[in-house]
Length: 433
Image 1 (cartoon, rainbow, N blue to C red):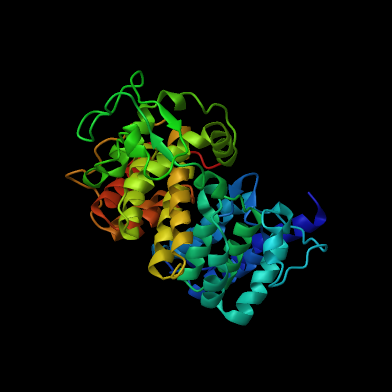
Image 2: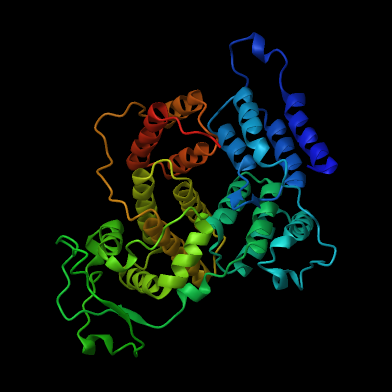
């Protein structure tokens, strides 16, 4: 470890102690997290740590902000900070002197992993001149969708945007730029349809078995020709059936996805491999959903939210799935705040990218079966009681993020899943690495 790294680590570690109330250990009442303290911590982290190392997203600011939203106390924030710090103190980024970004060339270095500090400096300056709101509205619509890290740059940016925190907005934009991995090649391809010699089951029937799954082939045809080919789509009556009961059941039954993911590689690497080996097939499933799904963006986002909730329930402690849920919430937030106003095509591409990542994650997970989610009796019937129960567990900090996502969705289904999460953490406390 270099002397500079030790210095920065010591500065960061000591930062929390200067905010800690020395009398806190001598009394039982809790001390709320002062907003000014939280802002100071986020600003301090802004200048010390990059957004990613060893394929792990830096979630320090987001977790602390979520604890604040859950009305956690200062001691819980300090404990969380100290848990996450060891992952971050080696992550001092290096500013590349060969890259000078400005409003005319900032897009030329997209995907340059070594340019994080340069993008951070650029967006810091832009926010200082334009303000948080105008910076997001100006630059985000100029960035095409990226596949990287389950859309976590978008989740980080959006949470900062909601709270007017310029460091997090700048970090999110810089993170999105330096890790840019274009989704467009997997969204724009040949016209695809599901082709089968036999009639496919209707949506009211059971999905086909792996041995009788329909053959899906890529065909390039004029728009009027599919009917002439006698094509039958399992999505033809989609409007009457939930997305996860159609799209994901079809993927689960498709033997071409069997055994495609093995080994302990990072999620991003698995997604890349899956797209390289099965990208055309995944694109066909995506095209079918986009063709037969409702044209209302609200409904499409609702569909993806429901699918992601089922995925979370099937893998309640799976961090990549938690990230997807946070990204789903973030995309809806950006949509509702009109960030993509007059950019309908771009919003459509982001939604398609999210759906594609959900399919990839589902396959990488081993295509798990979902179960009935709603329980007639919940241990915690309000979000406040859920928050208090969760915070009392002293669970690994990353699970704060999924609880926050569930709360933002605020449906009976998400409350039921929150209860499942708390119960699982009570019964099987995971090891925080």
